[in-house]
Amino acid sequence: MNAFFIVIVNYSKKENAMTRTARHRPQSRAAYQEALTNLKARHPWLARQVVEPAPGHLAVLEHFVEQCELLMKQADYRHLPLFCATTQRDKLSLRVELVGASINRDRALLDLIEVARHAAQQHCPVCSAPVIGGDANVSQGVRCKRHEATIGLYTEDLKRNQKLAVAQDLLTPTAKPEKSIRDEPLDSSINGAVHALLQALPDITPPTSTPEQLSRPESRATPQIAFLEAASLHSFVERHRAKPGEKAKRAQYIAERIREAGHEHRRLGELPDDWAKLIEDFQCDFPNFAELAEVLHDHFALHAMGDGRVAWSPILLVGPAGIGKTEAARWLAERLSLPFRVIDMASTQSSAPLAGSESYWSNSESGVVFELLAYQPQANPVVVLDELDKTDQQRQYDPLAGLYTLLEPRCARDFIDLSIRDFAIDASHVNWIATANSTDGIPAPLLSRMTVLNVQAPTSEQVAYIAQSIYGRMRAENSWGSAFAPKLEEEVVAKLRQLPPRSLGLVLRRALGRAAREQRDHVLASDVTMTSNTARREIGFMS
Image 1 (cartoon, one colour):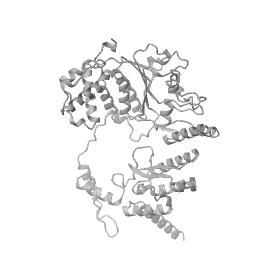
Image 2 (image 1 turned 90 degrees about the vertical axis):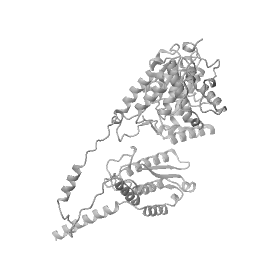
Image 3 (image 1 turned 90 degrees about the horizontal axis):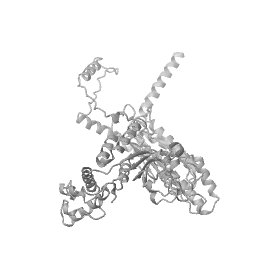
Image 4 (image 1 turned 120 degrees about the horizontal axis):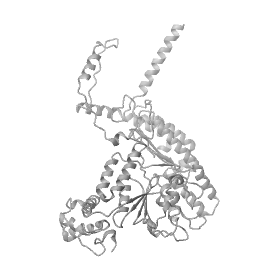
């Protein structure tokens, strides 16, 4: 009896293993479409939604849909909530929005989405076989051992791509060993022969990695921060719910905008893989900003060894007007794909543009910092404080008052906008760049919070290079650019050397217009018109 029982148990285990193997197999497109049809039949409200997950993530998606339905009300079915399930780079991508949902329901949905994304990363997108170590925050999904070297998601695609790879000598076909009737190899020496052939193949030396690639972890997650406390935001909405209509609507509007941008979490913009090349390009386009390039290089190299965030300590660029200080900051924000804002400090009459106006005013409004951080998905924008030395500090409300908190990272972690005192936000990751003609008039406590860099006016040789660079950007960014020659002629560049960098763009555009009027594909020196306000002045741009 005992022996018979043991035989039954072993057979059962073998049968279960065979069942699991059969279950974890790729699907054909027809089988996948049938599975989707059955899914939508079980959940009819999905009929008019975008549902295109990877075949291996269908089970995870159905469980997620069932959990969502527990949070939905009858009104949600009538209004058809936004639902989108797709696959991006072998990862399950989910987006769900309920009409008129409360903050608590939205938070619950976000939690369910996060759980489903992590669950999907634990299953192969091709066959749903379990995988170990999948992280929903990495850029690429994880496949099982059987399919990690394959391309495609469906049976037809896998077979076709394998044949193409073999035909192009990208993959060696694996021949199945001959077997006897007893399902055993005819000759055990075959394995040894195959091993010897593999050893005889020439070694392939992997490409040399750059220092930047070595310092960037392959599976590094996108850096995130806790932007605010969700409970505080909820209290803010509830407190204003009983107030007059406009204030209640404003509170609800603010909460909805924050929720759309990521609720209590924010991403941090990351350095590109070729950040060292970006520094080189910056030095070429702004040759008189060599000191700034060195400072940025130090910060970028440091953060590339960590989570790769874009961050630098507050910087003050001191130099004559019109040499491209603001344009350099704009260039950095565009190349780093970060939100960008310029605040004209010379015309600022109080700290309201930065820190908001007091909530007791009937026309109270939030400041630039709050709007940039609360309504954008990234928490490290580039903010330029233009003409900081021209701020009028003799006014009743000091325009610089908010900067004492914002430029100090430890204080900025709990920044409170004056128009919204119910909760604090984390403003410690803003990348500040201030500009000034001199440090005179800037309070010493502010100077101590910034790295002061002196920027000189470019030499005539540097102006010539800047002119060619601006001309190249104009050709690349405009539909008419290809109609003109790749470079400016030397006579034209010689005339442009006399201009300050600020005027180069305006003068060049007019010169191109004159060439277009005469149907020429190149600019002549006679096309460059020098007006009284574009002529190069003495050093410091002072008469």
